[in-house]
Length: 219
Image (spheres, rainbow, N blue to C red):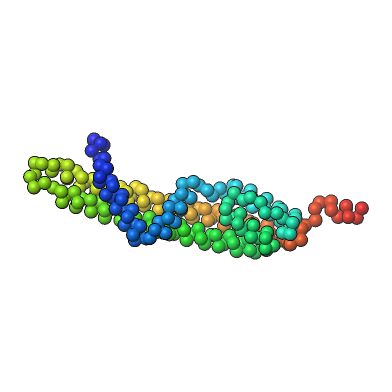
């Protein structure tokens, strides 16, 4: 098989460019930007379960020992947890931390669903533009069968192939990867939040006495 014969930049531009344009027109520029941000999140693997567990354990320890009055804001490697912890400390309210985390969870779930829908829409558009490219190539068939017939037919076949490959090997798998990654991340976050809520259940605004504090006061 001659793989060089499968390379046609013009056909690729027709299929990829047409698919992108149709998706932007159907979904809107804002939805496409949000989808791109979700793809970047998937590629960068920003969520680190072990790092978040370590940061939450440190926060729980500080709150249980020092209380919310004396606990100082510190850096979280997870952006949502950072903002929720800062709001909790500034408002001196543990329930606010869980409320903020629930709000960020809803936003992440909505972003993942939006990205999945946009990519699924793009996967539907790709074969259509493969067919459009085929019709375009066929419209360029010469009147004389001996002049450029093979090139026109090759372009017609390639655009159909590009449309199918773009949909089935790129867009659909990417949409499924976002869905699976989002579900796995939320499951891990939910477990950590349940643990954090349990640990903070007995925490109060006033700090717990430090070891040896009672003996020191008595002395």
